[in-house]
Length: 167
Image 1 (cartoon, rainbow, N blue to C red):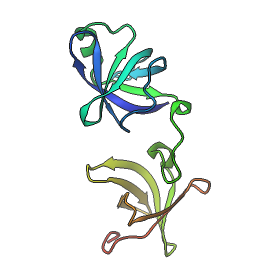
Image 2: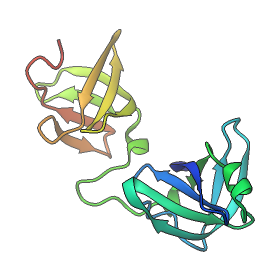
Image 3: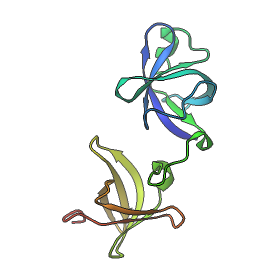
Image 4: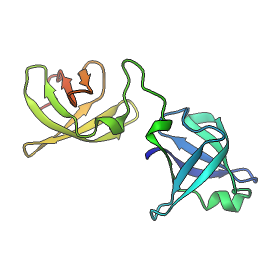
């Protein structure tokens, strides 16, 4: 299962919720598909999606079966929305999903091994990979000027560090 968003608020009075999509407009959130809602405490339950409509600011208005009041919608706030990996659309030629590159080894174009990708931090302007290895941690911006190659088959990323990036 992969998290595709988080319920951030109830919307109006009829049980619709606002979901902050991790990858707007959340193409895996569609009517007729079931998702898992994971409450902040970790409890999960499956629920069918009745409707999903893009909203402003990367939000999606979602109606879930069985959630038909503002109070019921409010009870879902904080829950993560999870879908099976098979429900994700395939990435394009130069695209990837962050969950699939966790653990990929990172090396410079000169062949220096830096470690492996431990997590991704969203910063607003661009995302940043946290790369850990050999007792060090590097923060690598995920931008075209730095990331030169993502080799899925070899589970490897090649970067060209900007001046001062690895100091």
